[in-house]
Image (cartoon, rainbow, N blue to C red; front, top):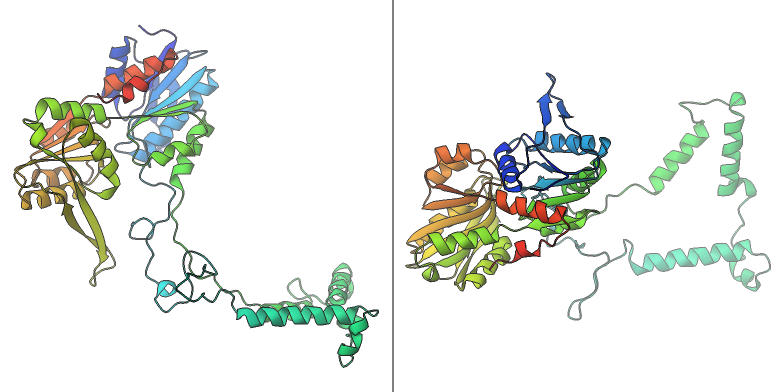
Length: 451
């Protein structure tokens, strides 16, 4: 039994919270979670947490925004109640797919939107202005008016300096220039303008400006009209940094999650982040449940998960294949149609798709169709987070997938009733062991050892 510890569960996954408390042999923390009629979240801690280590479990399946706000309020409530340390346990990290990288409207990372600025005949580039000249290519036009415009501007400054200095020996060269009167200079105009503003009672003002001031503003706007800078990258809101800042400002001292969709999320935090792996569970399932797994092949459904899939393939001594997804815009609509290409040989083998997350299941179902078309005998899908939102269950039931294996990082009870192909792996003991080791100050590196 672990002492001086409180495990509180949010409304997102009460079954996982009960499993963790059973492994730790502690009672479930007493917390009141409710909503007002207007929809505001109410959190009330019903037991003392003063001087204790508090672990708050909240996954992000289902109503993600409500669960996130509920977690933030619970963290703040525990810090206000003088908890010694508050750890947020997020089996599925919210907004983990919206990292801080540029996207266009279609969602393809680092791609250029089709507009007038990236046409082949447009002189500007997205990378730099001016662009660094290549040895085999002429330099691009970096300045708006070219080098000649720069030289003319420098010559004009030299002329003005020579005229304004009466002791300059080169004044004879500019004898045909007439020195402007004091009343015509910019300094005089600014001084006169400020004087008129101080004596506004004796002058006529229109909309807060004198007629002369309006003429100056109109003249300056005509001289230097605003030009939008071409080559602007389309960026989305930085949701990753925002969620990290929200958790930190609410009072979280430590964050624990599993299989982050983008590992760079750990760098957004100023507090420790432990990213646990569901890889050992998936490898154990392959060894024990898939017959003749040595003759099977691990397949990554996209290039982003290649590193994850190759780690499992190398650990089990299995071959590896990759499905390359190429997005090309269609003529009928602005949306992009993804064409899939298989890199590898799956003919006569059992194909095992490995990915970290399935939301609408469109990617894995299309990948399974491609694998069956290429001669795969059976197709498994092994996923850490089975969100399965929308019509994902119906899509899986009608797909070429033979079995879908997910963990219970998000609730799977309703999904399992509707999908006979679904099999669920338990992750409660992994989080329970991580909580015990963190509470006692032990290393959690043993949880990262896949073998």
